[in-house]
View 1 (cartoon, rainbow, N blue to C red):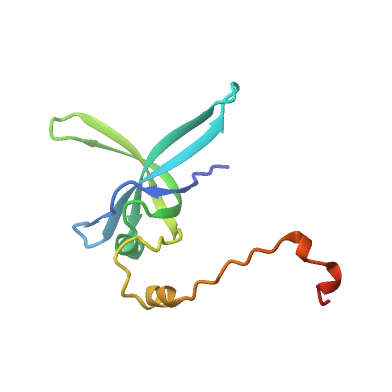
View 2 (view 1 turned 90 degrees about the horizontal axis):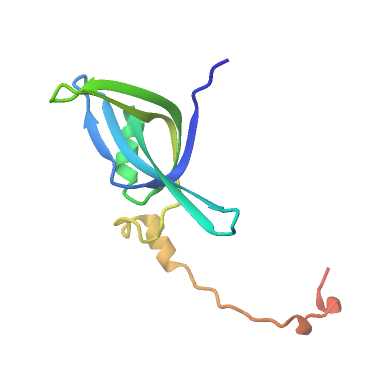
Amino acid sequence: MNLNKVFLIGRLTQDPQLRTTPSGQPVTTISMATNRIWTSKSGEKQQDVQFHNVVVWGRQAEIVNQFLKKGSLAMVEGRLQTRSWQDNQGQNRRTTEIVCERIQFGPRSPYSGDDSGTPARQAEDKKEVLPEINIDEEDIKPEDIDF
């Protein structure tokens, strides 16, 4: 049995790049960073960052280009693919990238992009800020709670 499946959750390191193939097919490339944090045997916090190139095709490519930008959080499901080509100097080149099959966008920051005019953003701005009520545990008695 064979399996070529990749799941990534990370942030875009640059804005998506949308292009169109000569046949008219939209293709978007994105670069994502994933972090791994662990504690070494000596108790020190360690961190590693990996960068991944992702290729998105078709209508999904247009949607990614429209809604994601540098710093956006996304989950990509896809497969690994290695391509070979010759550069302008005649050197053989290879790259391994993730071909996206599905993508899910992460939560949008209220400060990301210029979405201040959208109905959702306007509704969010009108939300009432609830006051914080500090209650000492000594002030609450079981007999005061209606069940």
